[in-house]
Image (tube, rainbow, N blue to C red; front, side, top):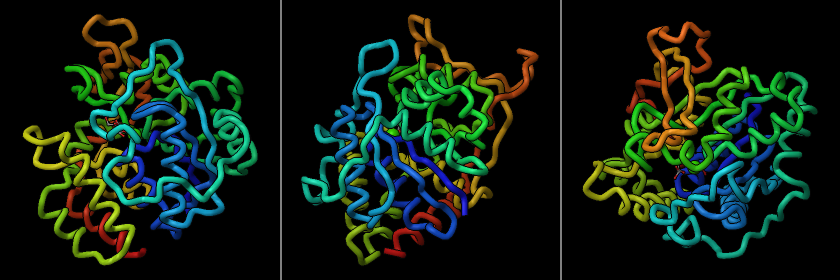
Length: 307
Ligand code: BDR
Ligand code: CA
């Protein structure tokens, strides 16, 4: 099975990504979960990560808290989508039972990578502050990251016309990651907006009779309200990279040179993808373009049935 670290800001869809990963222990081994400021503040995101670990029984996976602020800019949160707690609308116990691992997420990332023999895949589903800090602190760890599997960016935005949230929340960090030389599989909005929890999908989820599936239904219902009128359902952004790791055949990619805008007046956080070789540089990204929706939902529903 593939060894992974999940760096996240739960967040409803982050929570669902963790739930999906934990459902597939034969395919994925979660070595650590690290948290970052993003959807809400890092303390709340961390507490939510612990609550999700309690829900799915990830008792032995270390959870470490990371950066409370982006590298350069002021924090920018998404409580409008995920609620004040970052995970509003569920019946999860308020206080986690699982305890936090000592040490900063950046150091846990470094140590986990260093102690892995064959390297690890790094799943980033929040702003990339921790990853950028880890790469700057100990540059040699890049060689231990076999792939960064990232949710973020796209050819259009959701926070601004140009920028997706994870990029907008810390574009300077994203820049360090894009320039790191580590192979990147990027799941931007072009891809994740193909994973919409439409009413028929919600119905299929409701037919699964266990607490985890019920919690997922609550989560989707809560954050669907933020999408009302714009999309046919809530986009399950963060589960997409996990689904790809479980079954790489669920999507198609196009190679690109991707940069992230850190200066633009209208474009801060925009990912600029060169698909046509205009920049004459070696592609740094496998840019996910197409999702096999049937396979994705099959995989998601099957995962929830395991609980
Ligand atoms: C991303 O932003 C966050 O709100 C979600 O958790 C996801 O990682 C989507 O733009
Ligand atoms: Ca996220």
